[in-house]
Amino acid sequence: MGKADRNKSQSARARIAEQQAAQRKAEKRRRTLAVSGVGAVLLVVIVVIIVAAVASSNKPKQATATNGPLPAGVQADLTVPASTLAKVGAGAALPGAIRPATGTALVSGGKPEMLYIGAEWCPYCAAERWAMAVALSRFGTFSPLRGIHSSATDVYPNTATLTFYGATYTSKYLVFTPVENQDINHNPLQKPTPAQQAIWNKYDPSNGYPFIDIGNRFIAGTTYDPQILHGLTWSQIAANLHDPASPVAQGAVGSANLITAAICKITGNLPANVCTTAPVRALEGQI
View: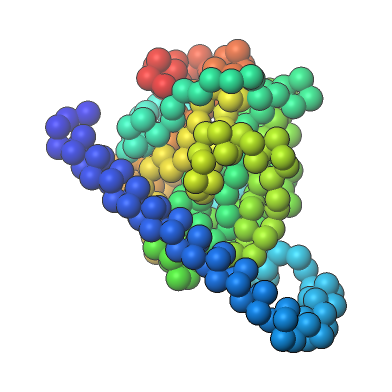
Protein backbone atom coordinates (compact mmCIF):
# COMPACT_ATOMS: atom_id res chain seq x y z
CA MET A 1 0.00 0.00 0.00
CA GLY A 2 1.45 3.37 -1.07
CA LYS A 3 1.70 6.40 1.18
CA ALA A 4 -1.29 8.08 -0.48
CA ASP A 5 -3.44 4.98 -0.08
CA ARG A 6 -2.29 4.57 3.51
CA ASN A 7 -3.21 8.17 4.33
CA LYS A 8 -6.58 7.77 2.62
CA SER A 9 -7.27 4.60 4.60
CA GLN A 10 -6.28 6.24 7.87
CA SER A 11 -8.52 9.21 7.06
CA ALA A 12 -11.45 6.88 6.36
CA ARG A 13 -10.83 5.00 9.61
CA ALA A 14 -10.74 8.26 11.59
CA ARG A 15 -13.97 9.48 9.96
CA ILE A 16 -15.73 6.19 10.62
CA ALA A 17 -14.54 6.12 14.24
CA GLU A 18 -15.85 9.66 14.77
CA GLN A 19 -19.20 8.80 13.18
CA GLN A 20 -19.57 5.64 15.24
CA ALA A 21 -18.73 7.47 18.46
CA ALA A 22 -21.44 10.03 17.67
CA GLN A 23 -23.82 7.21 16.82
CA ARG A 24 -23.19 5.47 20.16
CA LYS A 25 -23.80 8.73 22.05
CA ALA A 26 -27.04 9.31 20.16
CA GLU A 27 -28.18 5.75 20.85
CA LYS A 28 -27.38 6.14 24.55
CA ARG A 29 -29.40 9.36 24.67
CA ARG A 30 -32.25 7.72 22.81
CA ARG A 31 -32.35 4.82 25.27
CA THR A 32 -32.23 7.19 28.26
CA LEU A 33 -35.06 9.30 26.88
CA ALA A 34 -37.05 6.20 26.03
CA VAL A 35 -36.72 4.83 29.56
CA SER A 36 -37.66 8.13 31.22
CA GLY A 37 -40.52 8.61 28.79
CA VAL A 38 -41.89 5.17 29.50
CA GLY A 39 -41.66 5.84 33.23
CA ALA A 40 -43.69 9.03 32.91
CA VAL A 41 -46.31 7.41 30.75
CA LEU A 42 -46.64 4.49 33.12
CA LEU A 43 -47.44 6.85 35.96
CA VAL A 44 -50.00 8.84 34.01
CA VAL A 45 -51.67 6.59 31.46
CA ILE A 46 -51.13 2.99 32.54
CA VAL A 47 -54.40 1.86 31.04
CA VAL A 48 -53.48 3.22 27.63
CA ILE A 49 -50.21 1.34 27.72
CA ILE A 50 -51.95 -1.91 28.54
CA VAL A 51 -54.32 -1.46 25.64
CA ALA A 52 -51.43 -0.60 23.32
CA ALA A 53 -49.48 -3.63 24.49
CA VAL A 54 -52.41 -5.92 23.76
CA ALA A 55 -52.80 -4.40 20.32
CA SER A 56 -49.11 -4.65 19.54
CA SER A 57 -49.03 -8.30 20.56
CA ASN A 58 -51.08 -9.05 17.49
CA LYS A 59 -48.44 -7.54 15.23
CA PRO A 60 -45.16 -9.15 14.12
CA LYS A 61 -42.42 -8.70 16.74
CA GLN A 62 -39.92 -7.18 14.31
CA ALA A 63 -40.60 -3.81 12.72
CA THR A 64 -39.33 -5.00 9.38
CA ALA A 65 -42.47 -4.77 7.28
CA THR A 66 -40.36 -3.39 4.42
CA ASN A 67 -38.31 -6.58 4.35
CA GLY A 68 -38.73 -8.71 1.32
CA PRO A 69 -37.07 -11.37 -0.78
CA LEU A 70 -33.92 -10.15 -2.42
CA PRO A 71 -34.19 -9.45 -6.16
CA ALA A 72 -33.52 -12.44 -8.37
CA GLY A 73 -29.84 -13.32 -8.57
CA VAL A 74 -28.64 -11.22 -5.63
CA GLN A 75 -28.08 -14.11 -3.24
CA ALA A 76 -26.42 -16.17 -5.98
CA ASP A 77 -24.04 -13.26 -6.58
CA LEU A 78 -22.75 -13.62 -3.02
CA THR A 79 -20.72 -16.51 -4.41
CA VAL A 80 -17.85 -14.55 -5.93
CA PRO A 81 -15.54 -16.25 -8.47
CA ALA A 82 -12.12 -17.31 -7.23
CA SER A 83 -10.46 -15.18 -9.92
CA THR A 84 -12.19 -12.05 -8.59
CA LEU A 85 -11.30 -12.89 -5.00
CA ALA A 86 -7.65 -13.32 -5.98
CA LYS A 87 -7.53 -10.04 -7.90
CA VAL A 88 -9.07 -8.04 -5.04
CA GLY A 89 -6.93 -9.45 -2.22
CA ALA A 90 -7.35 -7.25 0.84
CA GLY A 91 -8.67 -4.49 -1.42
CA ALA A 92 -9.76 -1.40 0.49
CA ALA A 93 -10.29 -3.17 3.80
CA LEU A 94 -9.29 -0.95 6.70
CA PRO A 95 -5.86 -1.81 8.14
CA GLY A 96 -6.12 -3.62 11.46
CA ALA A 97 -9.86 -4.14 10.99
CA ILE A 98 -9.49 -7.74 12.17
CA ARG A 99 -7.46 -8.04 15.35
CA PRO A 100 -6.29 -11.07 17.34
CA ALA A 101 -8.17 -12.10 20.48
CA THR A 102 -7.33 -14.35 23.37
CA GLY A 103 -9.63 -16.48 25.38
CA THR A 104 -11.29 -19.85 25.45
CA ALA A 105 -12.11 -21.05 21.95
CA LEU A 106 -15.67 -20.21 20.93
CA VAL A 107 -17.34 -23.42 19.82
CA SER A 108 -20.86 -24.71 19.27
CA GLY A 109 -21.83 -28.31 18.66
CA GLY A 110 -18.19 -29.28 18.38
CA LYS A 111 -17.53 -26.73 15.62
CA PRO A 112 -15.79 -23.36 15.82
CA GLU A 113 -18.30 -20.54 16.07
CA MET A 114 -18.51 -17.08 14.54
CA LEU A 115 -20.69 -14.64 16.49
CA TYR A 116 -22.14 -11.48 14.98
CA ILE A 117 -24.09 -8.84 16.93
CA GLY A 118 -25.59 -5.99 14.98
CA ALA A 119 -28.72 -3.96 14.37
CA GLU A 120 -30.91 -3.70 11.31
CA TRP A 121 -30.86 0.13 11.38
CA CYS A 122 -27.06 0.35 11.59
CA PRO A 123 -25.36 1.52 8.34
CA TYR A 124 -22.03 -0.03 9.36
CA CYS A 125 -23.76 -3.37 9.89
CA ALA A 126 -25.43 -2.89 6.50
CA ALA A 127 -22.02 -2.81 4.85
CA GLU A 128 -20.55 -5.58 7.00
CA ARG A 129 -23.30 -8.07 6.19
CA TRP A 130 -22.29 -8.05 2.54
CA ALA A 131 -18.69 -8.94 3.43
CA MET A 132 -19.74 -11.59 5.95
CA ALA A 133 -22.21 -13.14 3.52
CA VAL A 134 -19.59 -13.37 0.78
CA ALA A 135 -17.08 -14.97 3.16
CA LEU A 136 -19.53 -17.37 4.81
CA SER A 137 -20.91 -18.47 1.44
CA ARG A 138 -17.52 -20.07 0.84
CA PHE A 139 -17.97 -22.39 3.85
CA GLY A 140 -21.69 -23.17 3.75
CA THR A 141 -25.12 -22.05 2.62
CA PHE A 142 -27.76 -19.63 3.82
CA SER A 143 -31.46 -20.14 3.63
CA PRO A 144 -33.08 -17.44 1.45
CA LEU A 145 -31.95 -14.10 2.85
CA ARG A 146 -34.20 -11.07 2.98
CA GLY A 147 -33.38 -7.53 1.98
CA ILE A 148 -33.68 -4.42 4.12
CA HIS A 149 -32.34 -0.87 4.17
CA SER A 150 -30.51 0.80 7.03
CA SER A 151 -32.03 3.73 8.90
CA ALA A 152 -33.26 6.67 6.86
CA THR A 153 -32.08 9.08 9.56
CA ASP A 154 -28.50 7.89 10.14
CA VAL A 155 -25.33 8.39 8.12
CA TYR A 156 -25.44 6.76 4.68
CA PRO A 157 -29.26 6.58 4.93
CA ASN A 158 -31.20 3.71 3.38
CA THR A 159 -28.16 1.61 2.56
CA ALA A 160 -29.35 -1.55 0.80
CA THR A 161 -28.36 -4.63 2.76
CA LEU A 162 -29.35 -8.08 3.98
CA THR A 163 -30.70 -9.15 7.32
CA PHE A 164 -29.63 -12.33 9.08
CA TYR A 165 -32.75 -12.25 11.25
CA GLY A 166 -34.75 -15.43 10.68
CA ALA A 167 -32.09 -16.90 8.36
CA THR A 168 -30.37 -20.23 8.86
CA TYR A 169 -26.81 -21.09 7.93
CA THR A 170 -25.54 -24.61 7.32
CA SER A 171 -21.87 -25.56 7.21
CA LYS A 172 -19.72 -28.62 7.88
CA TYR A 173 -16.93 -26.38 9.11
CA LEU A 174 -18.33 -23.77 11.49
CA VAL A 175 -21.42 -22.39 13.21
CA PHE A 176 -22.52 -18.87 12.39
CA THR A 177 -24.58 -17.20 15.11
CA PRO A 178 -26.12 -13.87 14.10
CA VAL A 179 -27.85 -11.65 16.67
CA GLU A 180 -29.74 -8.75 15.14
CA ASN A 181 -30.12 -6.88 18.43
CA GLN A 182 -32.47 -4.14 17.19
CA ASP A 183 -34.81 -3.72 14.25
CA ILE A 184 -34.94 -0.90 11.73
CA ASN A 185 -36.81 1.31 14.21
CA HIS A 186 -34.36 0.70 17.09
CA ASN A 187 -36.83 -1.63 18.82
CA PRO A 188 -35.50 -4.77 20.57
CA LEU A 189 -35.32 -7.71 18.19
CA GLN A 190 -32.93 -10.42 19.39
CA LYS A 191 -31.38 -10.34 22.85
CA PRO A 192 -27.87 -11.77 23.27
CA THR A 193 -27.58 -14.68 25.67
CA PRO A 194 -25.68 -13.99 28.91
CA ALA A 195 -22.64 -15.74 27.43
CA GLN A 196 -22.84 -13.67 24.23
CA GLN A 197 -23.29 -10.48 26.23
CA ALA A 198 -20.23 -11.34 28.32
CA ILE A 199 -18.13 -11.76 25.16
CA TRP A 200 -19.47 -8.48 23.77
CA ASN A 201 -18.69 -6.69 27.02
CA LYS A 202 -15.18 -8.13 27.15
CA TYR A 203 -14.07 -7.15 23.67
CA ASP A 204 -16.22 -4.06 23.17
CA PRO A 205 -17.34 -2.53 26.50
CA SER A 206 -19.26 0.18 24.61
CA ASN A 207 -21.40 -2.54 22.98
CA GLY A 208 -21.09 -0.94 19.56
CA TYR A 209 -22.42 -2.30 16.27
CA PRO A 210 -21.28 -4.29 14.40
CA PHE A 211 -19.44 -6.76 16.63
CA ILE A 212 -17.87 -9.89 15.12
CA ASP A 213 -16.11 -12.61 17.10
CA ILE A 214 -14.46 -15.30 14.98
CA GLY A 215 -13.89 -18.25 17.28
CA ASN A 216 -12.57 -15.98 20.06
CA ARG A 217 -9.37 -15.80 18.03
CA PHE A 218 -10.25 -12.70 16.03
CA ILE A 219 -12.46 -9.68 16.68
CA ALA A 220 -13.77 -7.26 14.08
CA GLY A 221 -16.14 -4.34 13.81
CA THR A 222 -16.35 -2.11 10.75
CA THR A 223 -13.88 -3.52 8.22
CA TYR A 224 -14.43 -1.14 5.30
CA ASP A 225 -16.02 2.20 4.47
CA PRO A 226 -19.82 1.87 4.11
CA GLN A 227 -19.93 5.06 2.07
CA ILE A 228 -19.08 3.07 -1.06
CA LEU A 229 -22.52 1.39 -0.94
CA HIS A 230 -24.52 4.57 -0.47
CA GLY A 231 -27.19 5.09 -3.12
CA LEU A 232 -26.78 1.65 -4.71
CA THR A 233 -29.53 -0.94 -4.99
CA TRP A 234 -29.23 -4.56 -3.86
CA SER A 235 -28.75 -5.65 -7.48
CA GLN A 236 -26.11 -3.02 -8.17
CA ILE A 237 -24.13 -3.97 -5.08
CA ALA A 238 -24.35 -7.67 -5.90
CA ALA A 239 -23.23 -7.12 -9.50
CA ASN A 240 -20.31 -4.93 -8.39
CA LEU A 241 -19.06 -7.70 -6.13
CA HIS A 242 -17.96 -9.44 -9.33
CA ASP A 243 -16.01 -6.48 -10.71
CA PRO A 244 -12.62 -6.46 -8.96
CA ALA A 245 -11.99 -2.85 -9.95
CA SER A 246 -15.24 -1.53 -8.44
CA PRO A 247 -15.19 0.28 -5.08
CA VAL A 248 -17.80 -2.21 -3.83
CA ALA A 249 -15.56 -5.20 -4.56
CA GLN A 250 -12.51 -3.43 -3.18
CA GLY A 251 -14.38 -2.83 0.08
CA ALA A 252 -16.78 -5.72 0.57
CA VAL A 253 -14.80 -8.45 -1.19
CA GLY A 254 -11.51 -7.25 0.26
CA SER A 255 -13.03 -7.52 3.73
CA ALA A 256 -14.60 -10.87 2.85
CA ASN A 257 -11.15 -12.19 1.99
CA LEU A 258 -9.81 -11.12 5.39
CA ILE A 259 -12.81 -12.68 7.15
CA THR A 260 -12.24 -15.85 5.11
CA ALA A 261 -8.61 -15.97 6.25
CA ALA A 262 -9.69 -15.59 9.88
CA ILE A 263 -12.30 -18.34 9.51
CA CYS A 264 -9.72 -20.64 7.93
CA LYS A 265 -7.54 -20.19 11.00
CA ILE A 266 -10.31 -21.50 13.26
CA THR A 267 -11.34 -24.38 10.97
CA GLY A 268 -7.81 -25.76 10.63
CA ASN A 269 -7.65 -24.49 7.04
CA LEU A 270 -10.70 -26.42 5.96
CA PRO A 271 -11.99 -26.73 3.35
CA ALA A 272 -8.70 -26.87 1.50
CA ASN A 273 -10.20 -25.61 -1.75
CA VAL A 274 -10.95 -22.33 0.05
CA CYS A 275 -8.15 -22.01 2.57
CA THR A 276 -5.19 -22.95 0.38
CA THR A 277 -6.09 -20.70 -2.54
CA ALA A 278 -5.08 -17.12 -3.28
CA PRO A 279 -5.34 -14.73 -1.56
CA VAL A 280 -6.31 -16.54 1.63
CA ARG A 281 -2.94 -18.07 2.54
CA ALA A 282 -1.16 -14.75 2.14
CA LEU A 283 -3.80 -12.89 4.15
CA GLU A 284 -3.61 -15.41 7.00
CA GLY A 285 -0.13 -14.08 7.68
CA GLN A 286 -1.45 -10.51 7.88
CA ILE A 287 -4.05 -10.95 10.63
